[in-house]
Length: 346
Ligand SMILES: NC(=O)C1=CN([C@@H]2O[C@H](COP(=O)(O)OP(=O)(O)OC[C@H]3O[C@@H](n4cnc5c(N)ncnc54)[C@H](O)[C@@H]3O)[C@@H](O)[C@H]2O)C=CC1
Ligand SMILES: O=C(CO)COP(=O)(O)O
Image 1 (cartoon, rainbow, N blue to C red):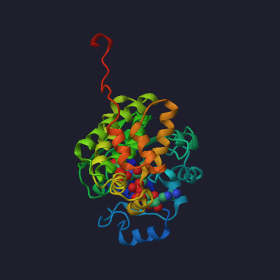
Image 2: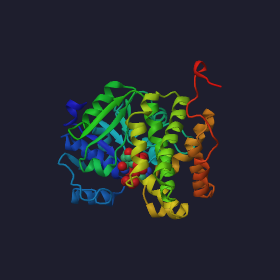
Image 3: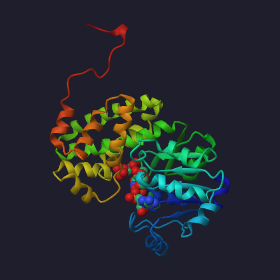
Image 4: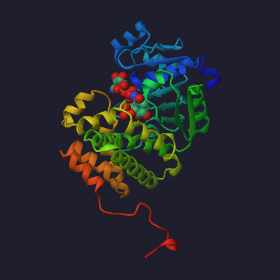
């Protein structure tokens, strides 16, 4: 794909911050890229100003990036579709592209989250909606859109069960500032990218309450243990969780105020009601949706995820954030590592 992709465009669906930044990254590498967003007025603003002033102000579009209006023709004529919409719009986006998609056109997405209500992995959703003939891939990792748009050094992961497609897709982005790794572990990459958003809310709440750096580090570390438990129960590779899409993205979103999930937590920790905090952030907060779905998966897998559980209680059951975080940090004494039988000391 990479050899011809500079002639046959990739179509990016979703002209929010991340879709636009990814489209800019490919176009900067000289690959023809089409960007489509659902709002006609927004498309016309982007076409005339040559930037996405709503989501990434001040970042001029590279020459190879075009905003397209005719979605039918774009889906039919593109080489590959990259979906970058919030998880709540993922399934409907797949249904929208499906009837117009070439029989074997590859589809990738940069959405982080699970299917609303069912907690299904987006890879499974995409397979069941699109069928077996399309190579599929997930893009994930520690990557704030504004920094990618500004061409600051970044690394992320492309995961696909079709190794050739993973490499081709990575090749569209890879540059002197953007390092793109590939993996086959689509499960691990999706779990890391989903759960870290819920944990970023918890870190934000703790910081908003003024609980300090020790508490934040404890939440990140114990949060990582929760990600590992879920990943292991679902059959992901543990090593993936120690890579960019696991610990990498967890650190990024739990510690930097650019994270919208962390921003939501901070606002709640500082005393806003959940409703007011959502209003104050005013942007896509995937962890808010993912929290419930992650708990569905945890219960099905019969594993404990106490941090995610407390986040759910704060977000949806009116629990007091201070008490919830204190409950977490003052849980009963337990071993961090249980010794194997031959090392057991009594
Ligand atoms: N912003 C970032 O730094 C990163 C975001 N992501 C993920 O990318 C996904 C998209 O996030 P952002 O671009 O940041 O969100 P955003 O809030 O900046 O933009 C979302 C875009 O999706 C569009 N949209 C919403 N519903 C739609 C629908 N039904 N059909 C078509 N378009 C629809 C909106 O109009 C908007 O243009 C999320 O899952 C997020 O977790 C992943 C990595 C980095
Ligand atoms: O996923 C992200 C960076 O990797 C973006 O995080 P937020 O959605 O919390 O802003």
